[in-house]
Image 1 (cartoon, rainbow, N blue to C red):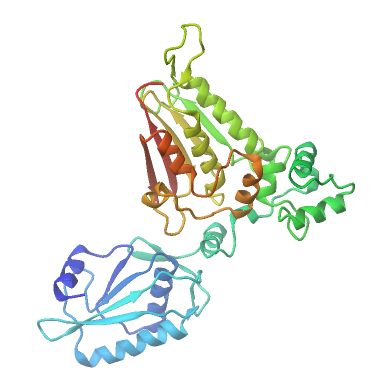
Image 2: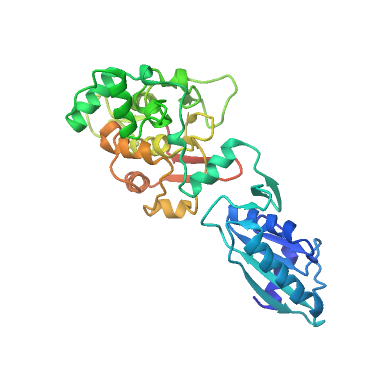
Length: 386
């Protein structure tokens, strides 16, 4: 970084990836700042820059003291220890600004010497204060996933016919004769915890009434008149519950009955075909059901307007995924158990990372919005008329 770049950064102010410190004298306070950056996307701390963006810098006598303090904080006061980088920028007044770069952590979550886990909150930081936030940090580091969560249900909640058919079709195996044998089988299949409770993946795929156990994980569909959301006016509305396969089939049926049909040269009495190829919605719905954030207690929403269809999933794209990356086929498995069983034929799944690309190939007029602040991911399928 050169002096002009430093001046531009200081003029831009603090944000979620950049912080200013006129001086540092407390190693524990610095360690908490480092932990917050490492738990996010990393960032830089400009030492010798005031909150208002002015740049007095540090006198030479302070530089060695602060570098020693930085080393102590990164090595001894953050768990796990961080490897940070520093760069000294010489000012015109011969003072120095230390540019401290904290990398995005690969061993999340990071915490200070008191065991406090810190998260970035805009230009500031805050403590982790919910179990969901803590679980998400473990999810990011592939130490824990939402579909592993134990549900308040045992083997008695299974849809025996559905699970029996799955065992026979996929593994050529008969349904266990006793509950103990069933519990052991589910544990071996990574569908139940050590205590015998069904995990979330099992409930979503094989429970008889998933909506009784996890009522928030449904799809809510509404067909609005015009192109705006109405509070009370709608043309069609339905909630879809049950196992993921039933939710998918119900949501697809809702879309098809509300889609504009074209005759495409066929006779006037022919039923017509949907303007948008059904494969577009198959891919987008499967993507939403498999990859949504199940740490967020909210339904998937399906909104139909005259000029577009919106599929709104709880949870922004995980880790370093971007809209540009998913369009080229990149993926990051958020719910690995769920994905592994969906791939066995429980939903029309055609390969990891290929769904978004296949939808765009079939209908290019699709936008994607990755809303980190609102913790939502939205697919918007544009068209002329429903």
